[in-house]
Image 1: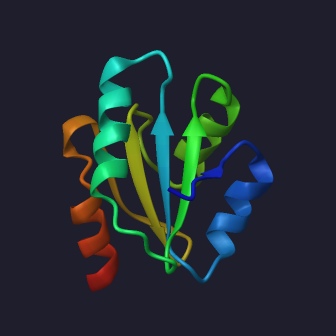
Image 2: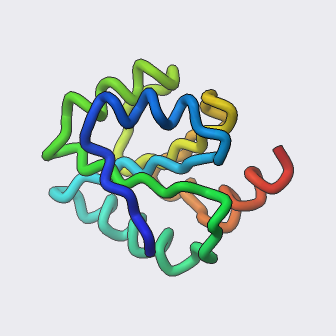
Image 3: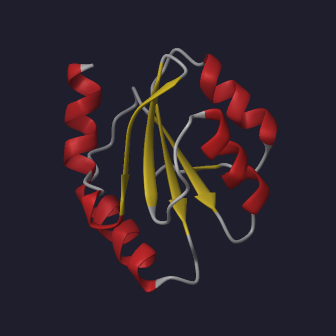
Length: 110
C-alpha cells in the first residue's frame, strides 16, 4: 500500500488544491478497532494511481487531525476515512462503515 504520511498543515492545503482525489485515513495506534479497520481497508483496497492515500496517525499528529476536521468540515472520529475530491469532502465514514470497495465506487461515480 502506498500511504503518504499526513503530518503537516501544508499538506492539508495541498490536498485541497490537487486535481487527483484523496482519501485520508485517520488512525489511532492505541485502538484495536482502528487497527482492525485499517487491516480490512488495506486488504480490500485495489491499487489505484488515480487516488492519493494519506495516512494520519492521530496520536502522533493530533494538531493535524484537528485541522483536517476543520478544513473539511467533518466531525473527528477514529478510525475515519475522508474522501476529498475537488478540495471538498464528498464522504466520511468511520468504524465499521469504512469500506475500501465502497469508497472506490463513490470516487468512480462522482
